[in-house]
Length: 274
Image 1: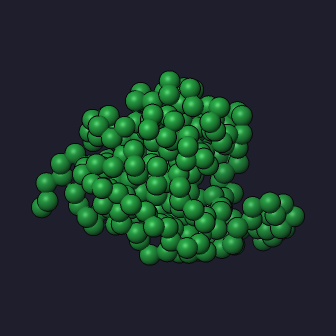
Image 2: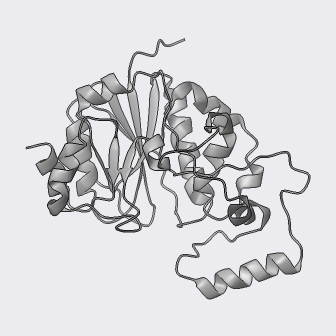
C-alpha cells in the first residue's frame, strides 16, 4: 500500500474557450505536493495548461449540462481518478472560475487530512425532495421555465415518487468541497441509482452519502463550512473583480481555500502580488 504523505489533489470541473483563471490558480498552487485532476467540457477545446512542480492530469471529456446528473458523473470520475492514484490525503473540488485564497505552503499545512470541509444547508426537504423523487431530463433546463413546469406537472400527474420505499435521508449543500480521501471509497461504493435522472443532484448526492457529517444545528454559511469564500448576496454568485482585490487580500491565508466566481486572471495576480 502506498503511504499517503501530505499530498493534495485539486479536482477541476472546467468549461469555456479559455482557462486563464485556472492557469493562474495552478501558478499559485504549483508545488510537488499539489496535483490537478481536470475535466474539461467536451463542447470546448481542451486548454493547454502548464506547471513546474505540480502534475496535471486530464480525465476523459464528457458533455456537461447545467443541473443534470452529468455533473455528478464528472465528479465521480474525478474522485475515482484520485482514489486510483492512492497517494493523496485531501481532495478538493473547484470550478475553472475559482481562484485560491491560500498560497501553496499555507494550503498544504492547512489541509493535513485531519478534517474534511463539506457544507450543509438548512434542510428544506419539501423543496429539494422533488429533485430525486421526480424524473428529470438529461439536458439542461436552465432558463427554461415553461418546460420545467411541464416536467413538474407530468411527474405530479402520474404520482411519480422514486423515493418511495427508499431508506434515504436527503441532505443538501454547496457542490464544492475539500474532503479526506479516506471518504472517497464510501462515495464510490454507495448505491447512486436514485441520484440519476435528477435535477441539480450535484448539491445533494455528496451531502446525502456523507450525511453523518451534517452538524446538528447549522449556524454558519454552508460555503464557510466548505472553506469557500462565495458571496450570494451581491450576485448568483457574485463575480469578484479588480475592485475587490483588497477584500480578497484580507481573507487570504485564513480559513478559506478558494473563492468564486472570478473571470479576470489579473485578480489572482493582484491578490498574490505577482
